[in-house]
Amino acid sequence: GGDGFGKLYEVAVAIGRRLAFLGYGQLIVVCGRNEEVRFKLLTEKWDTGQGLNPPEILGFVTNIDEYMSAADILVTKAGPGSIAEAMVKGLPCLLTSFIPGQEEGNVRFVTDGGAGDYVSETEPEQVAAKISQWLKDPEKMRRMSECARSLARPDATLEIARRMLSAFLQPGSDGDRSSPKSTASQATRTVEATTALPRTRPP
Image (cartoon, rainbow, N blue to C red; front, top):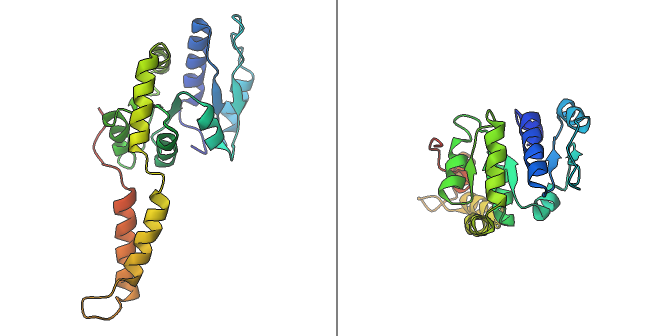
């Protein structure tokens, strides 16, 4: 997210160490507006002994879609925007945190859809281990990428706009235009129905 997720530092360091052990992979960390974590990561002593490129530590960026296009795996909190973009890119997601109630269903959306998994950020070594497991299994990565694309809704924004317009212009039951209040209510329900993910608890 724009502020970086909770234990970003611990998770990034654990992944960086695991990649150094494997001897391959490029870690890119987007810290958003969290300058404290960005500074800590910039001053971290990263192991690049096997010719591994040092991690690229970034702050807030406006071209995150380009980084997603270049990535093989996205490690992130269960924010709907990040997940939606990742699905369009066919990018497997490892989710590490979620806002209770608001984002819980997003975890199930990804895991049930076969597009990724969930490992809590409170276990950074387990997060890193999962990344290692995926990188060693190209076939699994391919399947998750296909599942992500199957879940993608690249035209969702246009569909929301169409439904909102339709709700505002739809005639009332008495043959007259619906009142502004009722059409606004219809539009709100339309947006919620179009954008909501299933709100079930993650495993």
